[in-house]
Length: 224
Ligand code: DX5
Ligand code: ZN
Image (tube, rainbow, N blue to C red; front, side, top):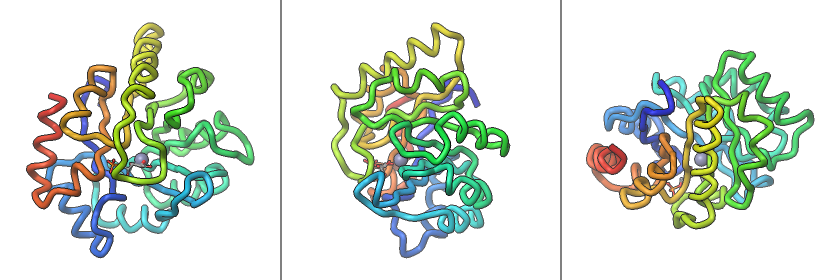
């Protein structure tokens, strides 16, 4: 799948955790191809979500593509566990602390046969990703401050950066996906698409409404 394909990625963080199997199947039957899993350590971000065991649980109940977003310090220390648990893309934050380095960690993710991405906090300029753009499959431009679902879309802080990333990618013949994450609804997704996004992480807007088939249809239509 190349970066011209638009996909809506439900974010498990926003689902009803009392029945993960049912929620994952709900997303799949609503047409999701990728599922976004937000790992939070209560250190890099001011919230704690879940770890590799949850990735394994989800892996065991679906063949959807698992897009794992590590909002953690020392992602390199924990990497093997997420690889073993069945992640297919692993995205790491350039702002996190590493025992080794971002570059080394991206190399390891790819060596394990997975796709890899780097994520940028809304306050982090695109330039911080430049050292890695030749070696990633995905650039995640956070459109909220990482840590919580249900926050408002940060348009002015993040759309110029997204467009700059798209322009740089296209000018240099690179092929990475551009993913946005946080505050993505039918009114904000088109704005992100206009600025270059093709992967749209939707937590509240996809899992939130009672009819997920309808919410996924509406979100997909908003970026068609
Ligand atoms: C925030 C996470 C997002 C979040 C989605 O740190 O990375 O994926 O779950 O947020 P909403 O609910 O705004 O779609
Ligand atoms: Zn996320």
